[in-house]
Length: 117
Image (tube, rainbow, N blue to C red):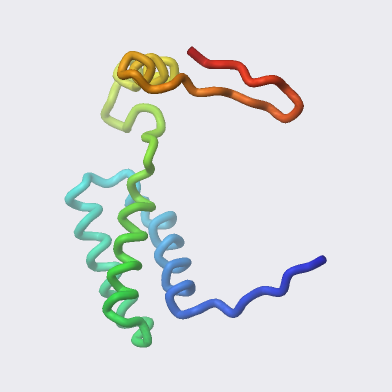
């Protein structure tokens, strides 16, 4: 069974364009204050480019952009940080276990669960 493509809304188009700008402009490597200023300017540009967006949708677009620029799990060391300062996956798991959280379980297809503690 194949699924038909739904027509993209104006918010979908603006969101996709925002993600494209984020990737091309290198804003992910910018300082937090520069990133916020860049995001504000870019969202304002998108507001002008897509006048059909409501104020609520523009707010959603900005929130989506900020979340996209700040991943939930930081990846490795930042440009100014030494590799020793980066937190390893094992350290994160050990910290979670020491704080009383259940250990993570790694499961591959067709295998029995194995704890990573």
